[in-house]
Image (cartoon, rainbow, N blue to C red; front, side):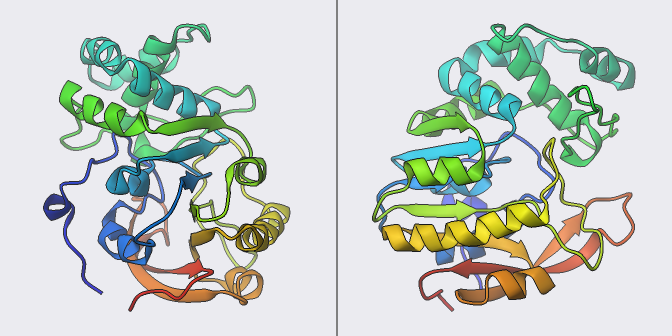
Length: 279
């Protein structure tokens, strides 16, 4: 399946790096999205690459990671202010650890967002991990050619976010309270499997079997409401059990989490939906 490139689509690119991002397969994923829908809902936002790619006119963007959602709020409301702070931050290993150790008050939205973006751009592989005290602890990644997003890029993202309601919360509650008939829900959760480790944790809490059970029940709820969903997930034993009642396709993507054995190279995932998928 071949689709238009990101450049041909003139899509807005996400301003964050994210472990498990679907950016490389957006032209394929976008072919599965219904042509017409009411509201776009994404409860596992991450870098929200499909959201930015589609630029929907009405959306709910959510994640359990409150600091991530606060960053989206800052870009939505004051992208120029965030950019001014971000561009003044020094680069380099020593600077990275100094900035990582900084803590700002909840009300200091601009500097907190600039710090989040900076750490995301220069940390190891765009991972999000915290210690038991809830503090970000991913090491410096020495990325090649990494830069912070330009002011123009953040302004473009702000324009797309203007159409979105932003929520920090659990996926089940977000979907249950916000999905109506005719809406489209895209779900890209962390992976859980019993037969081996899949390094896809990008939030402060791991995705466990009971979360997968809740997710499977939620798909039925979305279908009962009369909305459509598209789910991205690992092609594993759990997926075969929990999602067997729905339409599915297998896609191949490149894993690029250098430094983790078994987490590099080609990987197969499935996309699952409650409507026939394009070929």
